[in-house]
Length: 149
Figure (cartoon, rainbow, N blue to C red):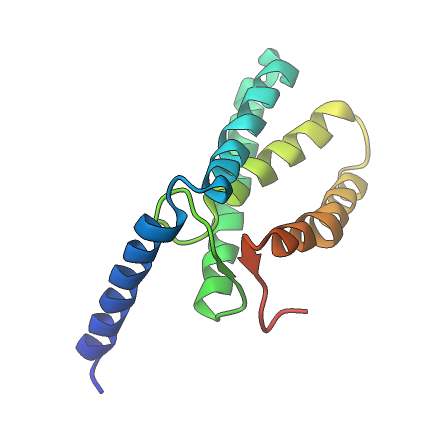
């Protein structure tokens, strides 16, 4: 087997996933829910933000998005989880989680308690994500964490 045959298999898989997305995912209730999860957190954040700290928020958000996207791609590459619903079929990873829910949740926690212990805030958010958020998305059938307990 050559690298070219591997890429042909990847392309065939991507074609199949795009076809499934167009026929079985696009415009379903799950798809609208995921689109809502992508947009709504930013609308909420707009009203909660402190405009004087916009630069700090932008930098923090970009760091969170980059780190969560890299970790998501690593998990997808090792087949630790996969997603049954996506906003668009051309992006690997779960965009609502990586670029919306996770950064906005962290920003809200930091905004509510700006002077609190950052390690404690991070632990609280991590516990909520690990023990509430992820199991909920598995329950809804949006994600599937196989090989991952």
